[in-house]
Structure formats: structure tokens, C-alpha cells
Amino acid sequence: MHLCSRDDVARLRQSGELSLSMPDGAEPVFLDEHRLALHIAEIHRLTGEAVDLGDTDAASSDPLDPTDLRLDPGSFYLGITRERLTLGGGLAASLHTRSRYARLGLELLGSSNFVVPGFGSTGAAPLVFEISVKKVTQGFSPTTPYCFLLLYRLSSPRTTANSLDYRRRFPLHHPTQVRDLTA
Image (tube, rainbow, N blue to C red; front, side, top):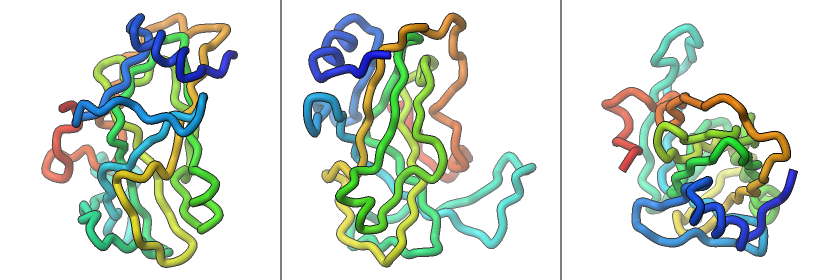
């Protein structure tokens, strides 16, 4: 496995093995030679008293206005990235909360920190973060990268196509709750 640099990412984008875009047309931002900054464009607070894992609409949510946003301990939030990705079969990625924010109690990775080869192959997709805080947290800004992605070229690429539609793989898939993320 090879950790990709900023130059590798540029070559992979040019070859079509990696698609990395933002709805506003901005170019990706790197924190350093290897860490690709990720920006949270939307935050949703999961609502309701209980979750039924057998229900296709297991959870509902409220979109939050980022202006004067306050995240409360004991609440659970989903953050949707501004960046949209498509990984070729020979690429994988790991996700990380930036340590400067993790040390303040902001956690973005409730479960998975791995992006599988072929992610977004049916259409460029955002990443979804599971957000929790240890203390009341405010001062959130959609222009600040609270997380980052490391991209890896695999020595053993995926051999079968990944046909999953990652644009709809989170509890906000109900059409009345979330706007079209394919734009």
C-alpha cells in the first residue's frame, strides 16, 4: 500500500482513477503533502426517542443552520462533506478527525474511518461523519477543515466492480429530509 501525496492525487485525478470535486467548483485543499482537508457542508441532528434498525427509515433528523450552531453532548449529529469522491478499484482512503479538535472533545468518526475501493463508482458521493461532542461546542464554521482524508494506492486492487450507491447510504435518505446530493 502506498500513501498518496498531493502530486499523486493530481495524477490520479488527471487519469480518471480519482474524482474529487466540490459543488462550488473550488479545488481541493491540502493541510500538508498528504492530508486532504474535508469540510462539513451540512449538519443534521438525529431526532426521536428510539431507533428501529428493522425500519428502512430508522431515524429522522433536523437540518441545522450553521449560523450560531451549538452542538450538545448527548445529541448525535451527521455531517455531510462538501467534497464529493469517486475512488477507483485500486484506491482506498482513511478518515481522521484533526487532533487539534479531537483534543477539545469533537469526534467525527463514530464508527468507520475507512473508505472502500470503488466508493462513489455509481456517482461521486459525499462522506458522512458521525459527530458527537464531549462538551457544549460552538463556533463551527463550514470553511474550517475539522477532518482529513489520507488516500492510498493498493498493491492488490479490487477485482470486482463496486455497484453500491453511496449517495444514499445514511439515515437521511428519505427524499423529504435531504436535498439531492448528486449535484
